Image (tube, rainbow, N blue to C red):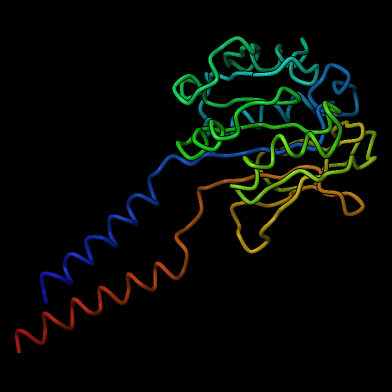
Length: 251
């Protein structure tokens, strides 16, 4: 019996180590592609700071990140965004010619997407293997419902989603959030995006950070969360069981 208890304890500890040290995949979900476009770089808005914050969050604060914009959409192909990323010391590649598979994506610290539809299973595997995704909606490619359908298999896996109607929200949107991707960001531009959805409000890994008039504008997924209380309680019970068995045997 003691051997069995020790085995259970070892299993619990291994779960804790894995959950505590695994590299966390992250998602930033933006409702609209205009935010990081050249048009979004107006004096009142802060796309420069926002892009640098996202890159920093993806790399864990490390410089010299390697990022891929796998899109032909103007929201990600502009010169201003390129200057921001390279000026911050990152490598910024804009291309849809690279092979879109897990092996290729794994060489990047983050992949930026908008309007150019891809294999959702590759994205799921990439995030589950520690990859980071920035995805912008509201591109109009195929219409709102079609656009949502092209991404929601991926997004739903991580408790997020795009709405099936464009939200009509436009202009210089005030930003108020303590999340690190919005540090020193007070306004961002957009024009009629796709609502960002949190499908499981009880799961702290996925959440909508910025909303306006009931429309989710920016959401995130972060798998770096503490162990669920249920697992911690299980571990406590196992440790107690092991201790009681050992003491009983000694007595």
